Amino acid sequence: MKVDQDGDGGTRDGGTPTGIGVATGAVLVVGATLLAAALFPPGDLPARVTVVAIGVGGYAALVPGLRALAGVTLLAVGCFVGFLVNRFGELTGASGEAWAYTPALVFAGALGAAYRRLRLSTRRPACGPAHR
Image (cartoon, rainbow, N blue to C red; front, side):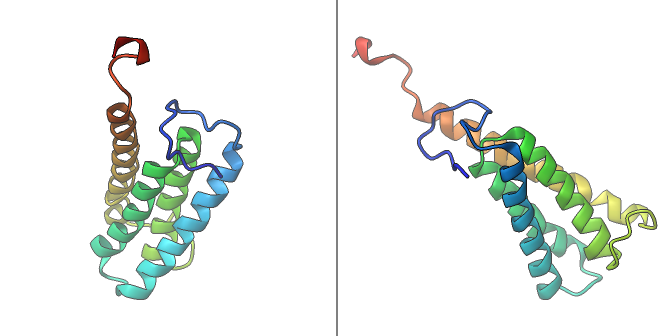
């Protein structure tokens, strides 16, 4: 998977299929979910969502595919509600309190993508090489 370190811009990942980006993000989300479950007790939902949100935001800051980011964010929401709140993978029986934390994951993904765009815009010179 290509991590955009050279700042070539755009929202497309020059050659890496979206599925590969989603699979890589899925590994990251599952790892963050396991870490959150190991570090914090079941009732500490704010701390657990923070760990998963850091993973989603970090993924968004490094990977240029917005479609992959959307898929990874949805997977993070499902893992948080299904496994960190309900513990058995059930999404239907979750309380409203569990779903109230999910905008934090979406916000983390948007913040990471915005950081990536800002980082790319500061790397580009205002004028081309002919205007030196």
